[in-house]
Length: 195
Image (tube, rainbow, N blue to C red; front, side):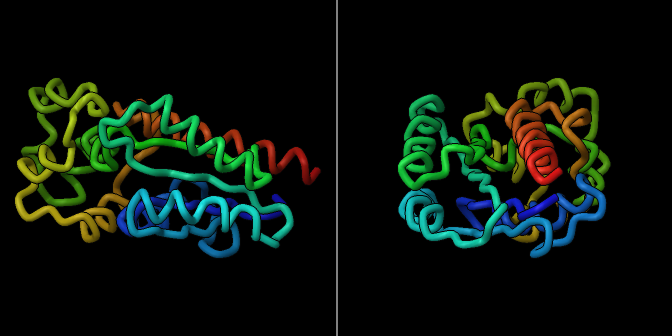
């Protein structure tokens, strides 16, 4: 593979998650060599950064992935806006993925990983798996996660989940599945273009 995947992220907790998770999902990957995560301080900071970073980026072969929470916004409108920023910056091939509604929905999609990460075996029960069978549909998954794991904090939680979150086939979050499959598709495109 020539170039890296550069992830432009809404928040530091997503960076903490991906830096630990990506080498597990993509064996052999090394942060800085195969991928780079750039965290921002919220949606506004990310949106302002996209045109500048994409148009000024000087490393040949690098491709971009933008990831942010949806937070109950109109997903079609959000995707259209971000893809427009990417195209205007000369990077129409940028992959844009939304965590619906928040990053924590990806965690609720894999209760086995939550139970292991926080040493809370009672979290992975048939009743809770049924309750969170569609984690992307919860308006505030972070609130639900705090109910399951008292004391949950975004940064420490992201580090812990990075070591336990599994592949898309084990996760009920549709947006997590779209993220993983999108990254795999971009990698395939990068591999075929460098062959």
